[in-house]
Length: 457
Image 1: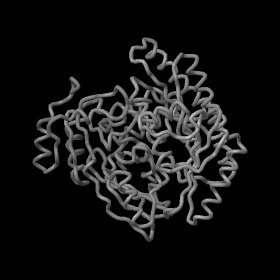
Image 2 (image 1 turned 135 degrees about the vertical axis):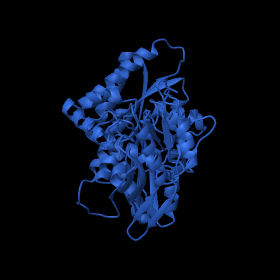
Image 3 (image 1 turned 180 degrees about the vertical axis):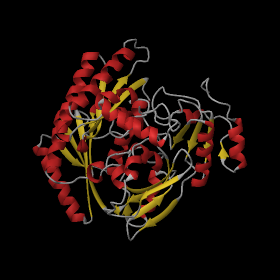
Image 4 (image 1 turned 60 degrees about the vertical axis):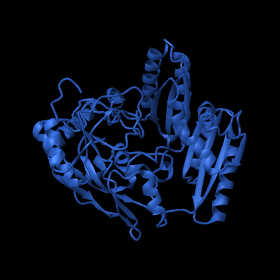
């Protein structure tokens, strides 16, 4: 526990008396997420099951000036749920009810602890789709997706989480409940506070219920795998697919070295072992023949754009490799990731600059991610745990990639959030008046600075 943290035994007794679950035993897992080498011990972990229980936790925290770190599934990669100030970790994992699947109006009403793929399965029963998807879908929680404005592979067609959230219930630090939006396609009454809370990483309020937009689920999909002689050529080809109006549901790029790490971990080899880069493109539709025609048209576009080969690929196999890339990288002695996003047309420039920066600093880099919307994961790899050059070199390389991203009119984080990892880099992207406006908003919503302290600003 940080040295200035208060004794929370009285708070624990208070919560237990109210019937609120306090986690006993080893709680160290609640002091980390998926970010390498970041850890801070929680003082107390509580697991509320309802909005009134969240209210009670925040009322006591405000009265006693106890820091509170909201937490979802702990799958974040920016240190957003690490309790750097100690205090209370407010885990929302037990608030896991799907309250409503409204098939007629196409909305879901869920609590923040619902696992993403559990929601997918429930929606499929009704012929519907919640379009957010990502490799951590079996463990990430909806509340965390909302808090970080998660994107994933389908964002190229459907947009990020923000585009799917039409209403929220949230608890403020004083325990009061606000409700904003709802099952409405149009709504201009008042400030759209739900859009403000999406991506706020638990720094303004604790989300306790979400109303989410659903879409009809396309029953047919075709998955294409294209091989390229260079990753820059693959990125240019992704642009050509976008310009064509084909509207694929995924356009993923994987540098060969990144794919090789995933293949080795899985024991599952993709075709085109000699290709420098691969594009994974998926099209979907409501008629099988039309979907196949769309796939053929995209295949022709890819060949015209410089692909060496294009195959219709087994979906589970290629997605299995794509989804395993991040996990395979985490198994190395070390890595440092930049979740960069630039305008789609600047994606080849970003990839080119990332490789130039890596060579200049003597570190290895791989690029992969969502080429269709300009979101490229630039991951620096440490293969030798004893490399004395690594720490200084990678720190410099990461900073240069962030600077290059902003110079290309991009953002320092696309879908992983700011958290601890990118907090000090915010001035690269925002001027002081903009940062001051964010600080003023934080003070208005959380005057004592108790909600997820040490993050963002």
